[in-house]
Length: 542
Image (cartoon, rainbow, N blue to C red; front, side, top):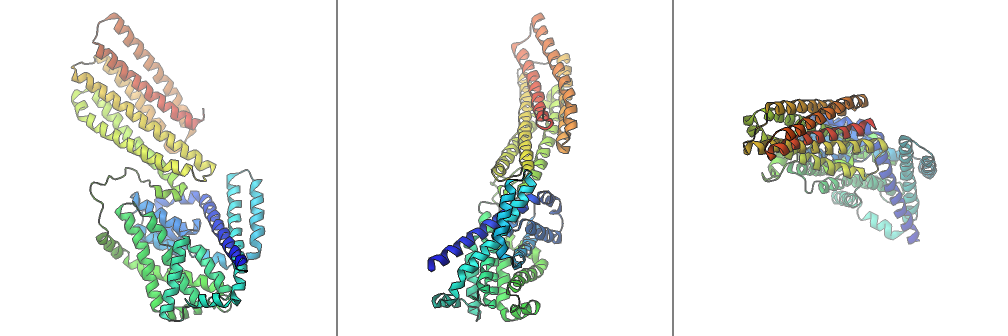
């Protein structure tokens, strides 16, 4: 008997968690385009941040995902602490939607729903259709898992030892309320899913193993337990990210303290809204929602004060801590669609730096004074681009190992390849600058003709880069194809300059360093053109 109960409860919980995971991932994929718009909206006021927190959590069906994503945004300096607090408050409301999904009494249809979706996705060809099917399968497994847990717990109602165990943390006194809340917090911290513990709470209540007040107390505790995910995510993060994680815990703990201190009145308020006798599941879902709504209303006026308090308690990062150059963070991989969109922004930022290098290098070809001023700046820009490449690659290779759809997979690979090509181009630009400096250090001057040749070649390649960078920003295949003509023109100009130089070597005597140095510069410009052509091939699918 005990073994059968254990098998059903554990099996049901496993299916429930697996279903939640599938539904959450499926909804993230389906909501990908909407998630990409988050970055534009997150830079506004606290009320918009709260709305976005509700919206995102409702879309991905996981407050853990949205809070971890928010901490990632803070760690990447995309969000201020005050904005993050708004998103976290919204996430607390958004997560309550799961409870209302559980109110649907379709447990017996969960298995056929999951089965039909699993079979149908095997015959679907489009990624979107398969994702929809897997999302429905996840929803079906949620209800089937609840049904299994419910069936497994039915015999427990008649077992005195279990009845006595559950009565040990009954919310029949203030201490009992705190004990029940502590059990809910501990269970959620272990499972790391408030949705799962909410499902368990509803199942226990429906089977009569716990009464309504105890269920409400458990739900209160679950709101504290779910903050463990954010705390774990903040380990190793910067000071502001830690503050956001701590704020999540403080907000929920304070909320539980006020709710438990007036528990009797709170219960009466809830029972006026939803009668637990006629609809126990909906009453528990109401308790979950109303707690978070009231807590958000309580904290909204004090977001600034909470942020200021945390800034005093959690010290700023030490000056020696090296900051990141991009607004990407490994915690953001919870929402790959956002990473893809932000990566494009970072690659565009790389393009801006390369344009600065082109400008400074052009000045340096014709002026020794400009070369001496610009070379350290070019080196600094190139070092920064090396960091861009590392940070972009680290985060994007992480999301490639996840279950990305084909569209995001292709865009991620395009972003990584473009990033690599841009960084390589900056390397060659720096080499050209260093070669010019080497010639100058040895008091070797280029003739006016050679300077004009290099200036023209530089201008043409700079113009080609501008065209390709614009094409990348607009993801316009026609612009990439049109750039091929300019590539061919540059190729001809390089060959002409190379032939002239070789002829000049044959007909006159020149320093070996001048000959090899000038040829190195020409070859580096040719290599830049080759890497720009690589980008054309990536997007034009040549």
